[in-house]
Image (cartoon, rainbow, N blue to C red):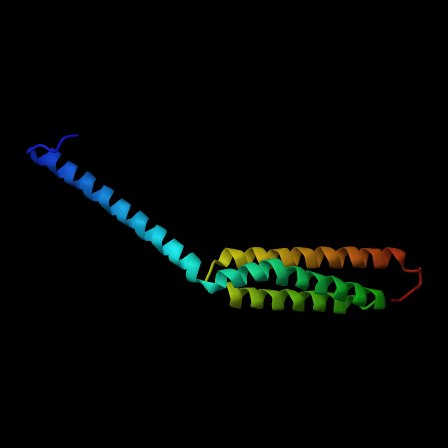
Length: 137
């Protein structure tokens, strides 16, 4: 499209060029913001450490606690331990990842919850299947 002296065409041409310039500037600003944020946001490293280190450690703690308590036979305490671990993991995740993305928190808490519940269910199932009849726990 050529920018002629016709009012409509000239207006359209200016509008297209203006939008193009704004899009280019916004992309450059966004790219610069993303680059600077990535370099200077220390919490990105913290979130990676939480996801890579803390979540597996919490999962191991949950598993050990569930196994230890299930062996003793106190089923109610198993549920309490799992709930406490989930709450602690959720609080840690929210405090650490709050500036970043709530999705990270949701996925992290979901992973801990699924692992905790599955571990509890499998341990309790094993315990209930293998206890002697007449055993009260």
